[in-house]
Amino acid sequence: MNSKDQKVVVDTFSKEVNEGLTAFPKYLSSKFFYDKIGDKLFQKIMALPEYYLTTTEFDIFKSQKTQITESFDNIKEGFDLVELGAGDGKKTKILLQELLEKSFSFTYHPIDISRNAIDGLVQNLDAEFPDLLVKGLVGEYFEVLDRLQHLSSRKKVIMVLGSNIGNLLHPRAIQFLKNLRAVMHTDDLIFMGFDQKKHPQKILDAYNDPTGVTAAFNKNVLARINKELGGDFDLDSFIHWEVYDPESGTAKSYLVSTKKQTVTIDSLSLEVCFEAWESIHTEISQKYDDDTVKWLATSSGLKVEGSFTDKKEYYKNYIFKIK
Image 1: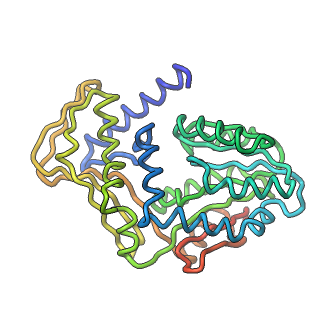
Image 2: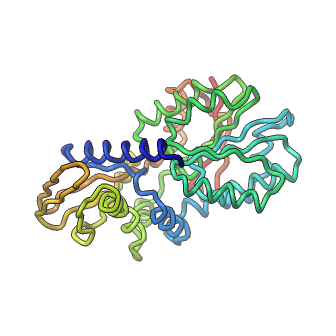
Image 3: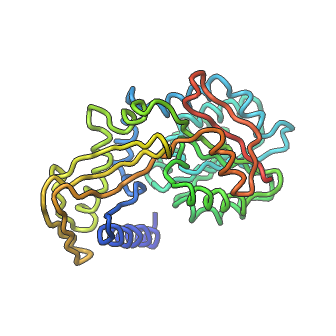
């Protein structure tokens, strides 16, 4: 990352931290959980037995990789595989291996907010798949959408795995899908994961593990403020709290101040006052059913072409086309 890119990232972090901590109620975006430490914590979360999302989507790919890849390009004309929020690419490698073995013509474009994640993924893929053409991009989802229009004139398959769409409430999810549609050509596809509604306790356990990894992941946003913006958050005086509403399908994460306290953030010349048990909203994780997904698609000018799911129907990957 060059100095200009670094300055933009820092400025975005400063701006949004200032906005979130001076709002009522307070909030911080979950996208700021991620740095080198946050990336490692999330890798640990994905390995937790309670965090069913990763293993379930992984199993879908392993058992249905042929059907999935054929749905991308069944006449093998060639395409660009664009993945938003690529992370470490563990699940995607199953599909990449299948595409290479079946001699599909494609270029893989992983996109992630984390430079550390993209650099690591590209390096790893170069070693593991020397014949794979990879072009990584760093940025936020909405910032990189414009870049998609300029990749090439051939078909695009846009992947959003891990139920990343679940970090957006329905109005923003619709806008996100509309933005995707705006950069799609007639034959382009979206391949997107949606975590399904299920027993509420199963969902709560996935976001509040007993070992405290998820709590540390959420608190990493406070650690980043301390490190990068000169904050003096006492992480031990905040607890991680998770709630789930089965009616709306919305899980929410909070950091809750256990005492009345004032936090100073030097680079923002900001003092943030907390009452005892005041919260900072850090993340939402939306859960879905087929009707909700069809409504989101219709509202965005898209249609559901098909889906792939596991035996318990905990999770589904849907394929969308332009309506």
